[in-house]
Length: 463
Image (cartoon, rainbow, N blue to C red; front, side, top):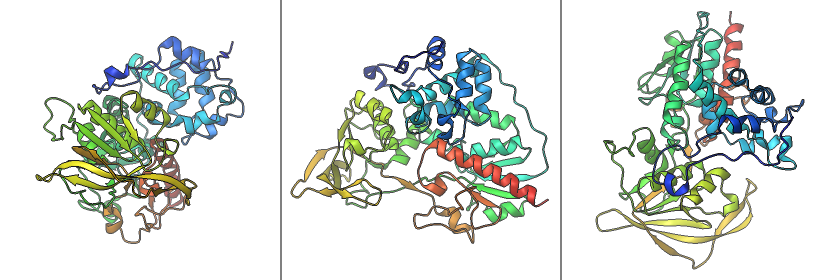
């Protein structure tokens, strides 16, 4: 019998007063009984509207049906046919704006908790079954992938399944991209990322770290070394700043630097050798998921007061609703319709505050959002010792500067045909944030799947 409860089964989680001072995962996950009961809320629609909104096209009704029938291993196998990182996606994908937004149950109540069920299936199978990794028979063809983030890893997995010899070149000392340097431990435990990557290596994917493409070796040299195609999935790791006075003061971070120190370099551990300011009053400028991650990390590092400073209103915040709610529960103060105009320093060259102006929303801009305009005579100051800039990122220019004939746009993003990631260079494909600018993990994974399919077709056409 279907479960016709109009509401999702709530996700168990740590109490805000406890979790705000630790880096343990906030959401603790469904129990077995919760997952089965929630799975029974799915109506198993024949038209599968949820699947059409999934960037990697997971057969969602099929995996949930198997879960409802307590065939958890079968549910995992269905997910794994489309997704190389199910435990990751179940935690960080914006399901509310993708698969769950199309769920029929959402018309007269809440949608099925698809993301929570995906997480449960992945976690349960990791804890209770030893997955047999099949190493495909090699076809003799070689593909190089630049970047070991979600897009590059997805493409690597799909190509390895097709028998390609795949080498992933990663600039950092640890593979995972934004999954390891950007998303905090309390949202995505790094042991899970490591295990997902280990599965790819068991399939035969080779990962070379500390390899800066464009510096150590160029894309053209990869072809000279015998690779038949290259997929550029180098992300968008170059931080943007506001270009206001005071951004060079001690105590000003980009969100990228701050989160990399916290996540990849473990600055929150007592024995960490990674320097990071032990702040008491912090402002994070920006309103996206990265801003929420930086603000919540600062709180966990011991800050007494943490502010989100955002030039539009609460309704316009681009971060996930869940992340905003969690931040508010943890005591983060939202100063919306507020824009910094100067970072103020003391006699030692350190941050002592920010000067802001109040904003009001005017006419819509090209994106359809109402443009913020300054309220005259509204300047005020906030006393601080740390400012974290989280206003977006763009692709590092190194690859485009060292790859002749590679077309990019005015934002520095690689231009592709939009369908399969083919760039202006034959045999060179690109996807993820390197093409779109900063976006979501699942969209990057979708680009990796599309590119892997196109690369397979391209190499086969040359035989």
